Length: 230
Image (cartoon, rainbow, N blue to C red; front, side, top):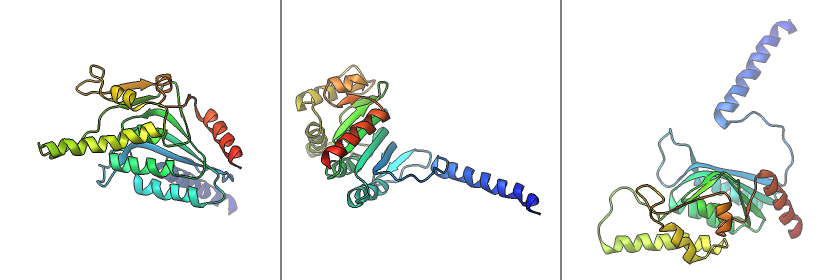
């Protein structure tokens, strides 16, 4: 009788595993006590408007509670931020960046495939930042879709919003404001747009990112920062 139930148990286990993969994109992992919180930002940063279902997105209402948990949980001693984002909503991305920068616990970021647009302030919001050799970062002025009123006040509003982003980036990295604006307003590199694409070590050479490296280097650095604080 027990042998007859074994195929059914195996089927249920396989079904549960498939459901986990479909919902979370991963297998069930063994629970390991860890003092580091890993947060992943992928796809497009979703703002106050819900993106279409075919878009991969990161919702700020999901990330902000996790960051508050990092600050409040005494068992968590550091934050590891992994980024592969095309950018997205400026205010949502900047809100997440400001929250990360204000954490009292050590934090390290790793730019993987890309840290484009509003992904740039997210990348530099941590205490130390890494970029893998093949990752790219696109620096360009802010954009707006939809109805735009063609008056001077609209340009002034754009300029103020752009300044908020520029000030945050220059405050949390080694790049100067003049150099960042020069990269942001470069012509001839992007098709039908202005801006610059930085690949791997170029971001380090400009002072935007601290070091070229991956997950191993990032965890090692984060552990150093944690030990230094303790």
